[in-house]
Image (cartoon, rainbow, N blue to C red; front, side, top):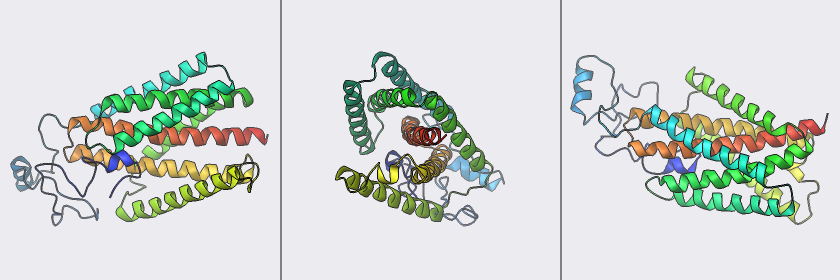
Length: 286
C-alpha cells in the first residue's frame, strides 16, 4: 500500500520495497488481523530471540533509525517554516495585483520543489524547507486576501485544521479506522475522481462554460465540495499516520523523518486551504 502523498511512495515508506536487511515475506500469524502487514524481523537475530521467548516483536534496536521524536522535530521545523513565511508575507506584502502574482509564483515554485523531492530516492532537507518557505508565502497572501473580505477567516481555518487533524488522529489511534489495503484503494479512487472532476470544472470556468466558479462557487454546492475535500484531507492523514507508524516499527532510516514531515505538511496545507474556503462560504451566507 502506498500513501496518497507522492513523497511517501518513495523508498523507505513503501511496503512493497521493504527496508535493507529485512525479509519482507509475510510470516504466518504475524499478519493476523492486518492483511497487508509484513514481518521485518525475519533476518534480525535479536527479534528472533524475542519471538522464541514469547516476547512481542520490537523495532530493530539499531542506531540511525527513525523515531517519533525525529518525525515531530522535522515536522515542527517544516511547519514552522510555513508559518514564518506566511506571517512575513502577510506583514510585508500589501493586498495588490503584485502580491497576487507573487502568491501564484510562490505556489508554482513550491509545486516544482515538491515534485523534485517526490522523485528523489532520498530526502533533501533544503528542498523540503524551500517548499515550506514558498508555500508559506502563498498561504500568507491568500490568507490576508480572505481576511480582508471575511475578517477572522484565517484564524477560524487554523482552528478548523487543528480540529480535523486532532479528530483524525484520535479515531486512528482508537482503532475506529483501520487502514487496510481495501480502505486505501477505495479512498484513492475517490480522491482521483475528485481531482479529475475539479480539473474539468477548472477548464469549464476558464472557458466561460461554468459561471461563478462552477462546483467551487461560494454557495451550497461549493460548501458540499469543500466538505468532501476536507474529508479527503482527513483520509490522507490516516494514510500518513499509518506510513509513519510502519516506518518507525520497521526501522526506516532516520533521514526518512524529513519525508514524514514533508508529507504531513502537504496534507495539512490541503486541509487549511479547503477550510479557509469553507469558512468564507459560511461567512458569505450569514
